[in-house]
Image (cartoon, rainbow, N blue to C red; front, side):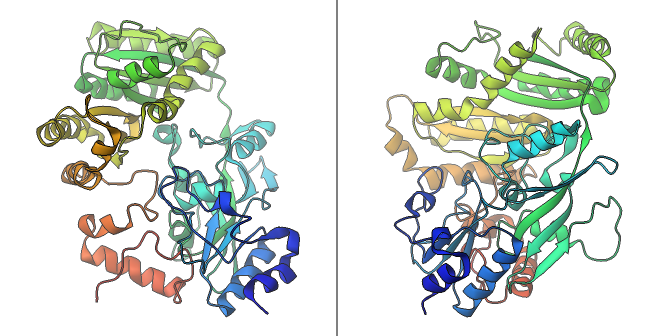
Length: 472
């Protein structure tokens, strides 16, 4: 029997597709990577995932796991060889347990992130992981890339929000690590190996997540700054004033807002004149009440205005106004797409190096690629910037993208020189795989290869992703 027919026998013909039937699943979000497969399969539970892995092992067939297919680095797209099996987790979408005494939620990896948030809210709790694709991305993909999002400043990345995992290993065993413990010092932390590994070490099928109390009140404001240095100084001021209540601090350059106005002219901007070079979206979560939150918000912002950290502040007066402010931030990807392809860089540097990184990198780009336009925005509170670069006026997108390798290396080299990373929250996948050797030490790469060899000795889990080829 062929692998395809054995998969049909195992799962049923209705849950096994050939490459033509699965064509829509074999292309990444931006169409950069396109693959072929022996089959795309839809197991219903962890036991079936394990059975598929064992069957693929007998046929030496690679396995690529896919959730919502919203990733940006091609990690969930198979190669063009047609040898792989694409394993979809869309049917592993159950909420297994809500434990409000322990403040934990156990859900399967195919759950859409928004549904995880809703399950927590139904129990009067908060699951704070939040990002633009939350209506379609799945928890398994969030864990596979250690997703960040807008609330990392307060709650941390996906790794910090996860207490336990259930994982199918490369040889088809099931590791049940779904322990809702905040303290468990009994050896190596296997959980942290699998989170962020992009499906190269094991297949995450379920997770036990941390829950938090719902905030009693939230305040949102849009802020204008005379310089990036003032924005960074204000962040320190806000940390002191709001303490743990500071939930989000999202930076947008004036060029980002001009692009939003150009592409979506009906979207109202809090400051229509756009007279300042930098803006930020600020959110405070308060666990006391609305009056307390508002008084604290106004006091901290008032002090910042008096001390010239802020030029202006626009405070949302209603939920609708708050949602409109967040819509500005969440529409940035669409605005860039409408304006034409640009070079996207998901970098992080220490917050103390943000100003130096942006100023020096902007200058280097103008020196080597005159006229290019920067769309710099992102999570200033945790040092993660989406440092995107568009074509210069008078030049075509194609001409600009022809410089992709050289321009991106300049940006990545600058991030590295400022103590940063070339991937803050999007992962490595296949798009950045071959860049790692430039930015990681030989010792670090060797340790990563040893871990891969120990957990997946036959190299069948998501081959060609994350790890560059080992040197001879």
